[in-house]
Image 1 (cartoon, rainbow, N blue to C red):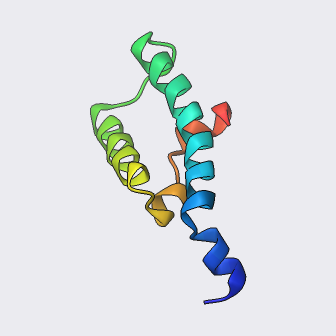
Image 2 (image 1 turned 90 degrees about the vertical axis):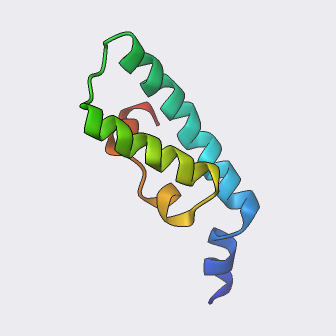
Length: 73
C-alpha cells in the first residue's frame, strides 16, 4: 500500500470525511422528516445501513455515499 493509500485510510482523514458527510446527512434527514425530500422505505433502509457503516469509519462507505447527500455537500 502506498503512502497516499495509507493516508486515505488513516482514522483522522476518515473522520474528517465522515464529518462532512454527516453534516449533509443531517440536512437530508430533516428534509425527509419535513417531506421536502422523499425516499422509499427500501432506499431509507439502504441509507441507514450506509450510515451505520460510516459510523464505523468504513472506507468503502465513506467513498460511496448515498447520492441523495450530494446536493447538500
